[in-house]
Amino acid sequence: MTIANAQQQVDEWIKTVGVRYFSELTNMTILTEEVGELARIMARKYGDQSFKKSDEGKDLGDEMADVLWVLICMANQTGVDLTVALEKNFEKKSLRDGDRHKNNEKLK
Image (cartoon, rainbow, N blue to C red):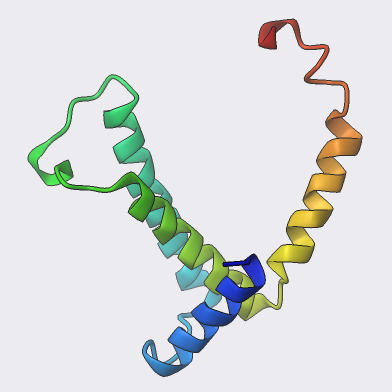
């Protein structure tokens, strides 16, 4: 699945199953909630916190997909082509950070 295909499929799902997009501000809040859920699992799986019963059975990939879903919704409703945006972001990072990380002693 390409990013463009994902944007199209999310849009189709929203318009047929989801009825309509939530407002942009609501989706921003939902994105924050989803990132928090992902952070909770990361902290327990890779950090120092222990799992609670409510965390059992949580799937890291599913939590990441929830974040991606809401981000795609926000892109769709604000007219952002995520393929173009990601390509531009790669270019920006390559220009800005082309030598920065190679010369970082902390990364060696």
